[in-house]
Amino acid sequence: MTVTDPTTVLTADTEQAPKRRLWATSAIAGVAAAAAITAVAAVGHAAGVSLEIDGEQIPLLGFTQMTLLGAVLGGLILAVLNRFSRRPHAQFVRTSVVLTAISCIPSVAWPDDTTTKVLLVATHVLAAAMIVPALVRHARPDR
Image 1 (cartoon, rainbow, N blue to C red):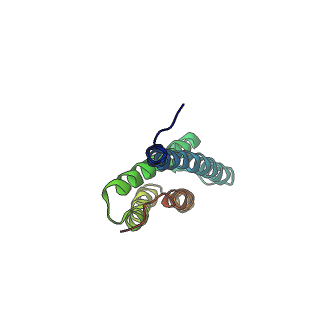
Image 2 (image 1 turned 90 degrees about the horizontal axis):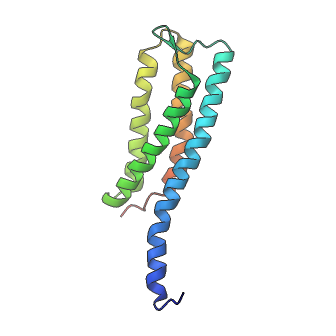
Image 3 (image 1 turned 180 degrees about the horizontal axis):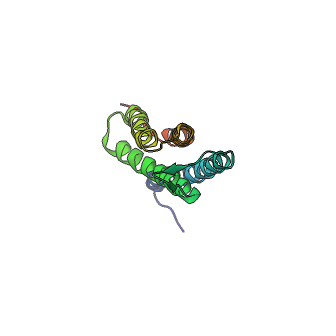
C-alpha cells in the first residue's frame, strides 16, 4: 500500500480512534462496574438485606443489566455532548450527577426495608463512581 498524503491518513485515523476508545471504555467500565455491583448486591443479600420491592426479589442479573445499560447510556450521552456541546466536560459531569441522583429516587421510595434502600442507593453511587471517571477522560475539552 502506498501512502501519497500521510496527513490525510493521520487525520482519518485520529478522527476514528476517539470514537473507538470511548465505546471501548464504556464497555470495559460497564463490565467492571456490573461485576462489582452484582457482587455488592450478592454480598448484601447473603448478609440478610432483602432486596425486595413490593414482595418481589430483585434478581442479581437485574443489577448486571442495569449497570451495563448505564454505561452504554453514559457513553452515548458523552458522544452527543462531544459532538454538539461547547462545554462537553462540564455538561457530562453535571448530567451524570443529576442522572445518578434521579436514579436513586425509586431506590429510596419503593422498598419498605431501610437496609434495602441503603444498599440500592449505594449500588447506584458506586456504579457512577466507577463509570463516570472512566468516561469523562474522553470528554472534549470545554471551549
